[in-house]
Amino acid sequence: MPYQNMSLDAFARYVGMDARDVRRQADRGLLPAKKIGGQWRFNRARVTEWLQQEMPGLDQEQLRALDRAMGGRSPGEADELLLTNFMGLEGIDLACQARTKDSVLRELVKLAERTGLLYHADDLLEAVMQREEMCSTALAQGVAIPHPRQVLPFVSAEPMVCLARLPRGIGFGAPDGGLTDIFFLICCHEDQHHLQILARLVRVLGGDTIEELREVEQAGDALQLLIARERAVIGLKA
Image 1 (cartoon, rainbow, N blue to C red):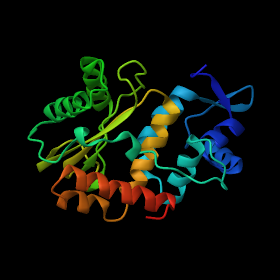
Image 2 (cartoon, rainbow, N blue to C red):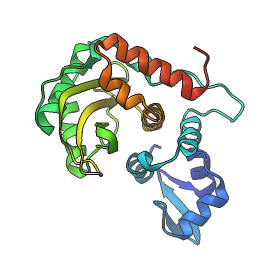
Image 3 (cartoon, rainbow, N blue to C red):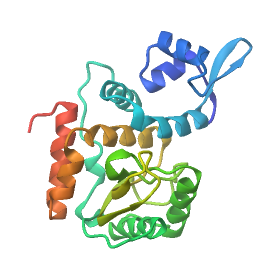
Image 4 (cartoon, rainbow, N blue to C red):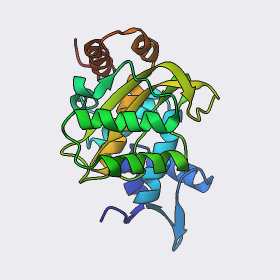
């Protein structure tokens, strides 16, 4: 039952937090929780939306804990490549000519079609447009991560991540008021998997990754850069 309520302890395990920290934050009204019968309860659907909005503001340690929790890994288990396993050269366009928010979203969906994995392009486009109407997925530093508000398990053959880069940034609702020129489209089949990929992507974009993505000239170079960065954040040797 994907939308069942979670207890405080279950929520703590789900997001990789200490239960004591969860209680303190819930008491302060910082978490998407309600008290039922004197106990904190967390609705899974509301938690998913909350995490999508809050994730860009988490620090690297919080992102790492969330990444591992969503992947069902204990602290002693090794991580593995996740983000770049769902990226291919067909889904990368470093010379996208879109000039508006809607046209960027359309071009991203066309990239998804180019992979040969997308079944229902119109459904995906409608979903990402609805998500942007609710709240922009733009981050600081000129990056946006469009994705459906809810996962679409039947829209594609398998999960995918696509990348588009514009020659000039456009207004996309970034929190710092800046222009956006780098876009990642995430399309997953399951909430927990979607959140893990989102957490991994935000981790990978730390440091100088964004500026280096602006410098590469070929799709293969962009993919190799992201693979190297993903290996670095999860501690895999080159």
